[in-house]
Length: 340
Image (cartoon, rainbow, N blue to C red; front, side):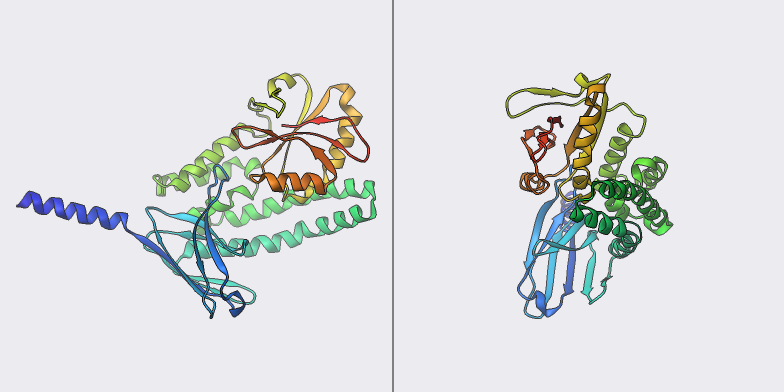
């Protein structure tokens, strides 16, 4: 009988652990009545985020989620495909959200409030450093002033460095760097030039949260960042284009090769495309070439960006979900640039 009792006790305990839940509830303005809210599970290693839960706001704007959880996760909460905030939800959490005119308040989850506070700070830093360069660059593009476009591209790079550096100061605060919430923003600050900060964060999270998937994803990101840090040898890459031709990075060894990473949602990346074309055609006879990777996960958005910027291209798919393409300026009919 003792054996049976212990077996039943173990079974009940195991079921309780497996059945732990997290609850998210809140109230939105009445204008959100009937709109669909979606929780998207964030993946910081593959960048393939996955919508996993959805509900609708009632007539008063109230909503609620009940989520089975085994460990802490980070969600993006969206309404009609527009992001409201990110949440870090742990098993047993009951998070109450209140959306006000100028702020979102979270109760029941300090980690979620860290994410909200970080985003508030990030927007202020963005306005301080980057917004002026975006505005000036847009004005230069509208006026068709190539010299001013290139000038503001350079100024944007400087502003971007200051932007990331100031975000890193915020991240280093003890309450944040000790939280799993910091994993979410490891993509935004000066991580590529501040491996010491990333290493210290990894040490903290591995000590406190060694078994969690979020910690594993951060470790993977840091290891990947180290492989492509300034001064490191670029990792080899090979893929086939739509015509069956193989593009291999090692074939470019010995050349002056610029690896350019861009995305459809990155305004400065797209504004720099004409500059890259000009640079290629100026220095190609001296062995200079440009190889570029789109980090978009949506083919439609990638193609849309090419169309909007007036650049044509062919896609080269591979298992890493990167986009290989050859491009040339439609207006100037410049020589193609090999991209991968």
